[in-house]
Length: 277
DNA sequence: CAAGGGTCCTGAATGC
DNA sequence: TGCATTCAGGACCCTT
Image 1 (spheres, rainbow, N blue to C red):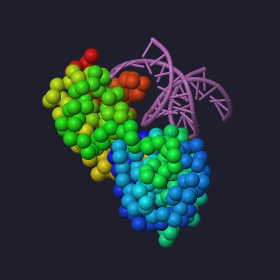
Image 2: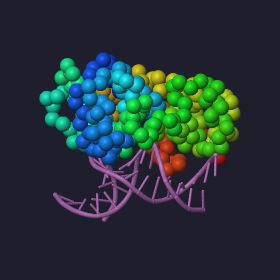
Image 3: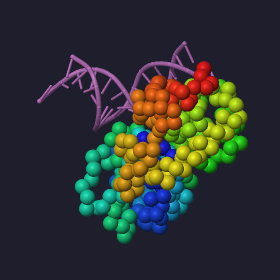
Image 4: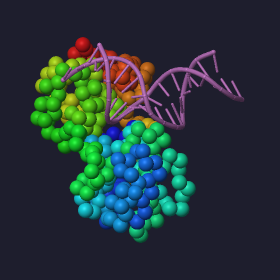
């Protein structure tokens, strides 16, 4: 499931390949995943240039000439990559963007359809909600002090808090488990009961983890590929996620899997034993 | 405010 | 072998 490192990897690829390219073809094949009707979408995109690509939390942003942004929420199986115009269109393709002078089209495909695409910004039509408004601070942009303020004020369990995009955006299930493991914090710990040292540790573990994952091109555990269709390499570095029953790489204890806030949660019961509720 | 459950969706994995 | 069931997840909804 694409999270911050995957969104960052995709955005970098798109920025490199699409900046300055003009959109000449817009095909919205599944209208229900967009905030606008195909007709409006086409009107607002066709003939305009992509000025840059970026990311906020796990969302990938395509900046469109004139001030609008295309916001891609990848859900769990969303893919956004460049495909040669000669290739056969894969199944579950929901959007195709063609560009002037490019032999590749940008396609968005999403078998499970948890993803969506919103065009937001100054020129979007009435009622177009801004998919970005509700997001909290970006996990890689927020300062240590901001992180401390957000976490220490909440009485919630730390793992659901890390996953709450309105508090901090960017972490999904994989990186939440992995950064709690790095920080040796039990996923059920109440955020406000962690001391300053533990929260500090968590903040730096999170940053370090995300930066390492980005440098490895993200994690491919199911469908994720980058803007060029390449898989990530960070999944082999996961210490707890998807490793139920395997020995902890630090202490050798078996990794366990429990449910926290409805999510599968992996951790080492020995390394992450303190502050258990 | 926090927590739990249900909903959407499809492909892979498992069960009988 | 083949069919049915279970599971996975992000974001949203609702109730307690």
